[in-house]
Image 1 (cartoon, one colour):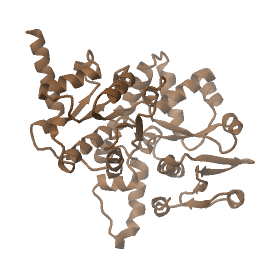
Image 2 (cartoon, one colour; image 1 turned 135 degrees about the vertical axis):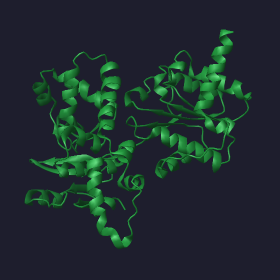
Image 3 (tube, rainbow, N blue to C red; image 1 turned 30 degrees about the horizontal axis):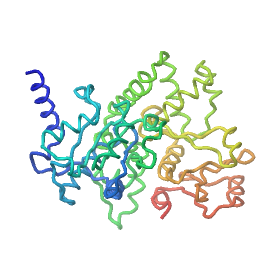
Image 4 (spheres, rainbow, N blue to C red; image 1 turned 60 degrees about the horizontal axis):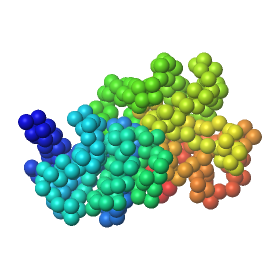
Length: 397
């Protein structure tokens, strides 16, 4: 009797998680097309595709939107599509293999059928990499998975080497921001872009916050990440140091970071400061950029840091220093080009990308004489000064 009850409850949970099994399904959220294109690109090969990024940046919505595409555009039988969030308490006692087996039993699916498996928050299963390797090797599944932790995605035992693709979901870019705000600008009204861009500088790109402008949402998100992904996960006793460390990181966004100085301010060891920094990086709350140059220069020079989302930064520090916020947005836009910063004789140029595009960010301002001299003499394939919203929108075009 007990086993029947457990099985019955599991079936109910699975049906709730997969409404397309019983009714016509159309994703009702806002489409983030550039990520759907990336997911579709890997549809016909066997690679396991991981979506990763900040908590609540929209990974689950993108997966659900892609499921809608599979059903309505690719005309895949909904019964062969299985979505489950692995952070559900009811699944704590089950392995990924057991969960998928239960799903197949519900629909009486034979082993020969190709299935599309979506595993949200896959890193909640501690041995997920070995399980996914076995599934990849033995089963006819196409697997999409998500995680909000960079460190937990690291495959130390190389179980998934050659078997995975990783797609990072970033906060909304300006075009997506306008879409979420339901704002369309006619070409004759292009002068309005600057006004809306100032709002984007303030709001950032966390989807739910853009839709609601509820500051408590961002505050709760920050608390959740710091407590769940950092303090609780790493069993940190000094909670106040972690919170103060995060505030300092947000204040230093767009600047070089001295771990020695931060350690001194917080009365903690430099090793602790370095460890704390990695925790915030792994949670996608910050990114770091190295100095351009040879390996020893990269190692011995401080890194510049940027917030994972400028809306989060602004809630922590207040909406000030628009130049630093603008630079942060430029970094997020060019992040995929692996930028470094240039620093010579006390003069800094913001970015040099891996394909040698030199970029200086000056929000409504100009380079000073020394910067201009370095900018002019530095060897690069292309040089860009980004000083307005219009220039921002046309980077790399």
